[in-house]
Image (cartoon, rainbow, N blue to C red; front, side, top):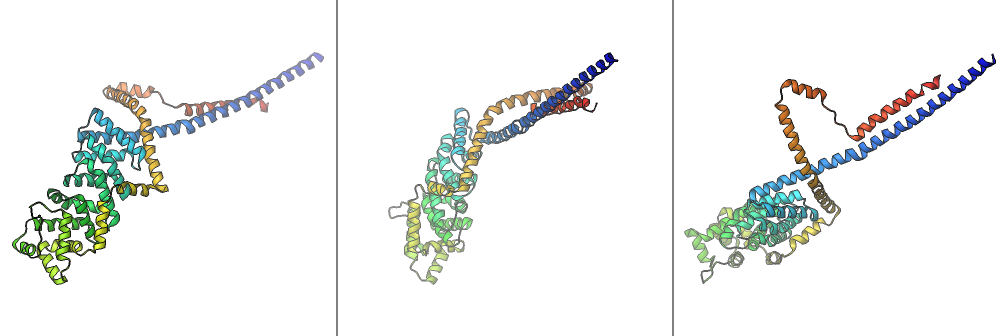
Length: 414
C-alpha cells in the first residue's frame, strides 16, 4: 500500500509540474502572439500604408508634370539640353513661387504656342508669374494674355517683365484688371502694334475708358474703331479732323505716339461745349466708339496725369504687388503646397524609371498570357501565388500563435 501511495503522489506531482509548464507555455505563446500582431499592425499602418500612399501620390504628381513637359516639347520642339533646362526652370519656379512646377509647365505651353523658343520662355516666365501672382489670375490665363499681347505689340519675350509691370500698374490705378485688359488687347493691340503705338499708351487709353465703365471687348473695340477712322477717314470725318486740327502725323510726316494723339484730342476737343463736342465726336469716331473716346477727352487732368505717371514709371510694380499679395498665411500655405509638389516630383524621379520597367515587363507578361490557350490560362489562375506584404503576413502569424496559446491552455481545466 505504501508503494502504491508513493506512486500516486509522484504521479500527481509530475502532473502538476506538466500543468505548470503548459500554463507557462500558454503565457509565452499568448504574449508572443500579441507582440507579433502588434508588429504586423505597426508595419502595415505606420510604414507600409503611408509609404504606399506617399509613393502613389508622388508618382501621380510627377506623371502629370512629365506629361505637361512632353506637351511643351511637342509644341516648342525643345529636346535634349533645351528641354532639360525648361524642366529645371519649371521645378525651380515651383520651389520658389506660389505656382507649382505643373502650373509652370502649363504656362510654358502657352508660350510655346506663341512661337517662343527655349531662351524666350526662360526669360519670360518670371515676369508672367509676378503678374499672375499680383493679379490673382490663373497663371495659364496670364501667360496666354501676355504672349498674345506681346506679339501683337511687336514686343519680345525679354519685354515680358516690363509688360507685366504695365498691366500690374494699370490694374492697380484704374477700375480694371488684367483679365479685362487682356480682353481689350485682343481687339486693339494688333492695330496699335502696326501703328507703332506702345503698350504703355494703349494701357492708359483703356484704363481711362475703364474708369468710365467701358471695359473688356467694348473698350478694345472703341479704341480700334476710333484709330481706324482717324487713320482712314471718310470725307465727313476728314472735315472734322481738318476743322479742329487733328492729325495722326507730325509736320515731318512721322507718326505721332498714341499719347500725343490723346493729348491732341484733349486739347482740341476738351474745351468744346457738350453739343458741339458730341456732334464732332459722333461724326469722327462713330456711335460705337463715341463713349469710350469721350471718356479719354473729358478725363480730369489730375486723373490723366496720375495714371500716365503710374504706368510710365511702373518698373518693379508686378513683383512688389506679388510680394504683397503673398505676405499672409494663405499665401505662405500656397507656397508650401507648391514646394511640396517639388519634393514629390524629386521623390518620384527615382521611382518612375523603375516603375516604367516594371510596367513594360508586366505588359509583356499580360500580352503573352492573352495569347495562351484557355486551358493553360485556367491552370495559371488556379495555382497563381497570392501577393501579401510583410505587415499583413505578420498579422496572420500573430493570430495563429495567439490561437495556439489557447490550445496550450487545455491543462487548466484538468
